[in-house]
Image (cartoon, rainbow, N blue to C red; front, side):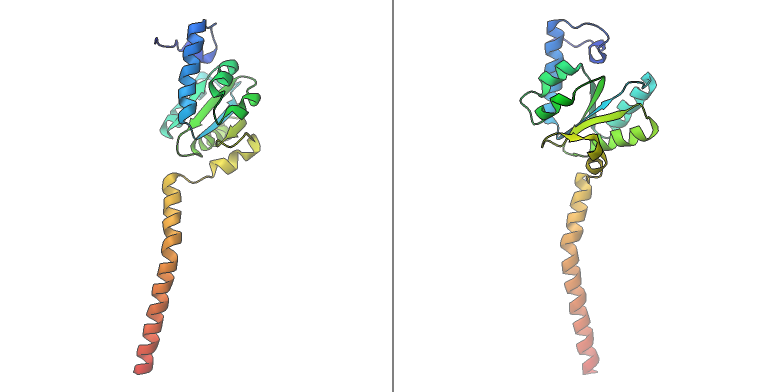
Length: 178
């Protein structure tokens, strides 16, 4: 299997059938490993801004792809993100999170604060399509480490309350005995 020309992802040149197959295979592999997906229109972003977005995504373990919509539709066919294909219109950038479902939404939400040209189109956490109004909700999902910390706190608190209650009972009995 050959390498895909970088210009294929930006849609700057016509792709032959073999290049199209390679793009679909590459994006299908990313989709199959993704836990969530976000699409956003990027019309008006500069090359520097797109480079910055890609760097922020990489730092958050988010994969970003710019692919022709027809090829993206083929890549998501038969996957948990198949419902999103109907929202693929306009020049889109696709972001994929792995196990940390909120990462892609967080990256796009934070980037869009300073870059009005990035407009979120749709998103999914593998259970149907959500519109852009749900971006903040998905972005607020805790990371794995945050979720584990919250769970441990919830599990620890009843034991701590019991220990404090037993200590109070012990102190009260000692005070009565004295």
